[in-house]
Image 1 (tube, rainbow, N blue to C red):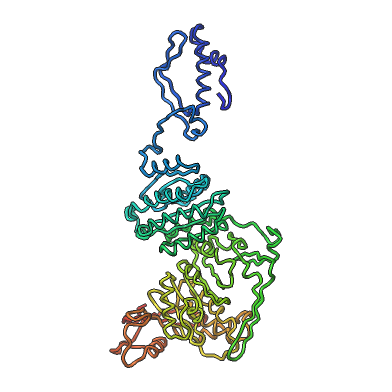
Image 2 (cartoon, rainbow, N blue to C red):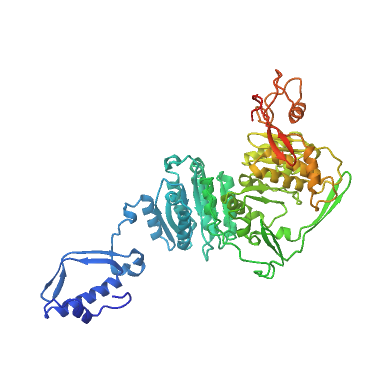
Length: 612
């Protein structure tokens, strides 16, 4: 019988019941046609009667087994009457699932929870039934199906209190099983608070309930090393997102918060990289098909800048940015019109070009100038890292003078931070001119989990600092014509050297050589002559590298007869000796141009001659 068609008693009698006596055949045919109608109207998925007998004109089933479609409950509940539905997935229902079901029955909203794997590391709190399917599908598609802990949704404008009760239930389950039982090296868990753009649900209100639950479980969440990833849009979403960011800072829980400008499931691969730093996945963001010839609005894309590494379509409003540099023998000043720079935002970036499988490194320049892009930088960085790319960032000067600290919250995503000494101390709000300010600033940024900080020092060269080591690189002495663009030239040179093998010393030598070449010419917009860079390379001395010991960023124990500065200068020339006269060794050769430079690998230990 075709779906959607009725069963005709005459056809049944002729086609199925030819072996029955003529006296009972019409009665049985009528019964089977009515049984089929009963099967369809009450949403059965299976029905078996065995045996069936006739007593007089009555048809009596002696045994019957049937299944109904639970998804038809809204239409058939009155016809079904009271049915005791078995627990799904062939198991007993957990008390938490029963509690959420009871909440669901008390509200006009929808609250659903099914626990899949309480020992997993990926928990979800998704708004909307459709979104919950998409998030679960994405998690499984990216290879984390065995880590998915729950499935469910909250939707239909639940109250703040109902959302709190729902969130509290999930967090209680999340913090019950220790991470170690999952069979992985302990790395923590993730909570994905996702959702589309709500039509009428008050995002600020529901997020208020979630924040209340986060506060109640904050100590347990920190103990389980939980990170929270949020994506949501809808009524009052900005207020809700701001409240979530503030809660993360207040509670000491790493929280990454995005709005509708970010793709629905972009937070999923971001979260997975925390669980597994080796995780790589294709970006979940849809590639932009926009071109300069096809702007999406009148305010977009009159200018297109494109290369093999990036593709941007810049908004026409505001015009081209212009910077006039006033450079004198002892001072310089900049008069700037930012134009489209501050209007550049996430939707102007073609991710299919910028972040792809062949992208090895992504550099973010002028953080404080790109005000329209600041909110989206965390998402862009995490997408790039999920593809296996490394990240560098240059803050540039904050012309407002505020030096907002939001930049510091990005540093755990950054492999290399490059700045000058003034930017370093101002962005960490350290006293200017204090000799201890630089080391204090290093400590602040390293505590923010920045992996490597590179600081230019003008004619003194550059310093690079990580948690384990410190490198100091002198530059070559030369007559300065104009310092405009020297910092940008250094950054380009450093990244060229560092990206080859994440070799800090090679990066510092290339950086100082490019910086030295830049100050030898007027202006900062002309390409640097390769011959000039090579000449500066020959004037660069080896990098001194050492491991911080008891004192901050200092080698263990300066000799009484030698000041720290004198000793570093000696180490940099590669002819330092220990107190008993044993020479330092440990140089590795790196071919640069026509000359092999000795890149110092100096530490507070003696090594046999010739060893690396």
